Length: 101
Image (cartoon, rainbow, N blue to C red):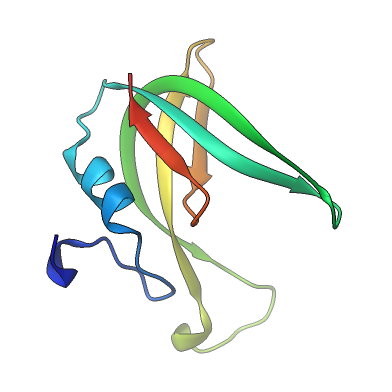
């Protein structure tokens, strides 16, 4: 996958593996997402969740003060529906794993 095919935001470029997976997913496909959660400075664990893929887009994280657009942090946000019907989303980082199931 060349650089033009990678999913990029103004903040970071996703890994080739995650870019390829996200670009190939179709609405309604089943996915398993594993996220690394952290509480405090030392407690971390991997948290898998399954559901139905909806779409991904870019989330511009705002801050409480009026700043220039170049200061915005933009991240890739994946939207899906959990098996219990809950609409959910997460932002992708280097520890995110997305699989078709």
